Length: 319
Image (tube, rainbow, N blue to C red; front, side, top):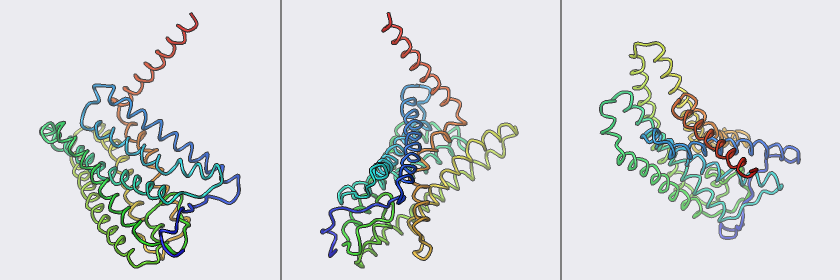
């Protein structure tokens, strides 16, 4: 291939050569995708419907669920379709669109996780100033800044990635269009510009990670001052899973995008991609709600109301 303009499609990674393993990957991804749809869909539905959940914490959680639902819907359905129909192809424009939306959503999610850490820090460490620092206007501005940051970062990366020529191959060694794997197809030194942009983004990401860690350290210090052992246990059991999810997401993203070529392997690249693109959207809803009694009560109320309406409608039909 002489240049990027001659490429009309890319070939994504095939999970397996045998039909049985392809179908196994399809069912595994389908189960994970349905779990993400159900969990995030419940949060997106219940928060606007319950006035008790109209607080900054749940407003940010609503945004997080929207981002999770969008990011997993950008990559997994295409991978499932390829496994089911035994295909690998994705169009050039489809690959560019997938890369843009995926980067947009995961960057915005990372920024939002930073905002959520700040929200919890203020709630625990500065409760008297919570209403002032996190009023409705401030919350909307912070959420908008997270979405805007994701959009700008994605636009820059996508434009840079698809402005370089590709001449080695059109086979992407990943189940979706990922920058490090696309850059391997380039035969031009202009890819250094993209690498520089990745390094700048990584530095900004590391800054957000440090902010998150410092916020949680301050939270834990405040929790340790709680006189009740039961209160301390409840606080730790609430915040430690959140920090674990953030740490998994950030560490796998940074490793996937910044690891040296010497330790790269197809299996390792695949595992890292699954850990930061598929796992978080599926596990975030249960982790953020399992210790949250208000959210669980609201979900039960919604399910009960839906079941009651459905039963009432069925009874009326029989009459």
